[in-house]
Image 1 (cartoon, rainbow, N blue to C red):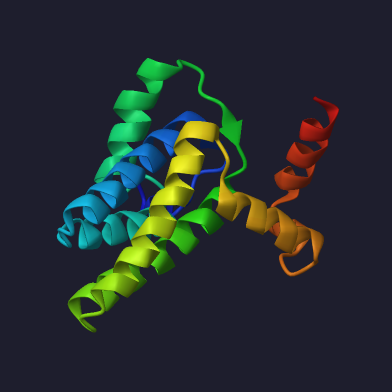
Image 2 (cartoon, one colour; image 1 turned 90 degrees about the horizontal axis):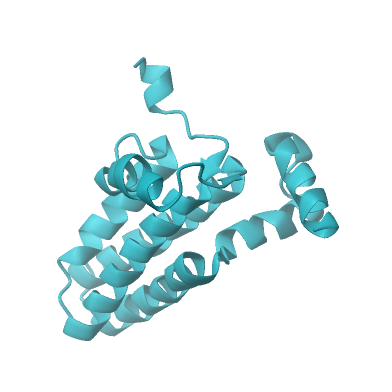
Length: 165
């Protein structure tokens, strides 16, 4: 594997693996909220940062989800466009890093927990209902012209495919 391969985000992404990762993130968020144990926050933040930079390559959770769990759930998986998933991982990275810094640096535990609750809700929607808030935000930004169509030409095709089904 070359350095370029290491930092390449997959396109398409296996939606089954993405939902497994989201389910684990949701569990971590809800455990953090229920117990007020902040030690999961840096792990969640690292996972998001690793996945936004490299897809599953540097994320232990991403590796387990892609190589072990997802193939056992669905041999074929369900390919979805990579750029919206990477955008969603970026949003998760911002939220999880913010929660970590709020807890450990600023001592603002309640603010951190509010962010963790939002993160947990978004991850639950993704894992249970395949509703990716970040992906929908990406779609809206594309339609508004904020994200150019060249970033995700496949997204246009996916939108057309969804409207036909």
